[in-house]
Amino acid sequence: MKKTLFFIGLFMALAIGSSYAQKYALIDMEYILEKIPAYENANKQMEALSQQWQSEVDDEVETVNAMYKKYQADLVFLAGNEKTKRENEIVAKENAIQELRNQYFGPQGELFKMQENLIKPIQDNIYEAVKDISTENNYSIVVDRASATSIIFASPAIDISDLVLSRLGY
Image (tube, rainbow, N blue to C red; front, side, top):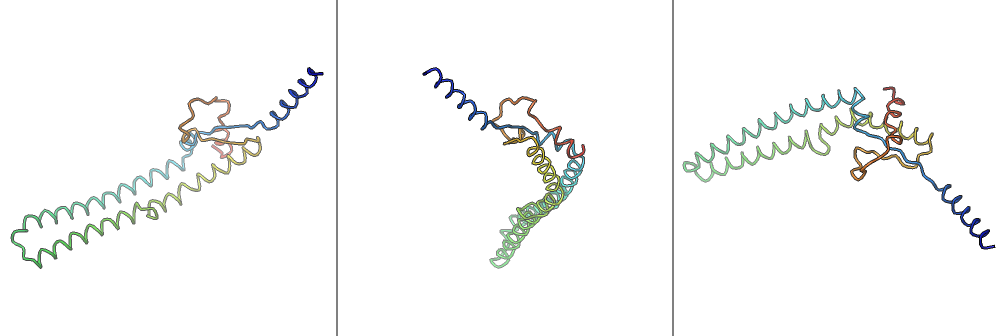
């Protein structure tokens, strides 16, 4: 009787355990993005504009540095009002530089907007492809190995990156 109960309990435990089995898959977002030409073009375009904007900001910083050096050289000859006026000009120019940085590189800046327009649609397409593949194959979890730093090893058999690229037409 005890053996029968043991086998029934073991069978139920295995049945319950297998019904809760979850399927996992991995993607390598860096690998996927490398294979998409539109992403590379968007990155090049953003990098070119970013360098142009940084150069503009650097020129303004050089102008402020020159103003400050001239101010320091002329300091002994300046009267109180002139001294205050020049200090205010330097501070105003520094504030304008900070505003320019925020305009280009800030959280709602031009670079962010460009990224939203160029890269987000590509990422959304990848997400939709992963979601479709996950639904079709009953994957409970899909992990991005490029951003998951705690993954030490993963079997290539569960990597669906090429399947995602195929679904996207690459």
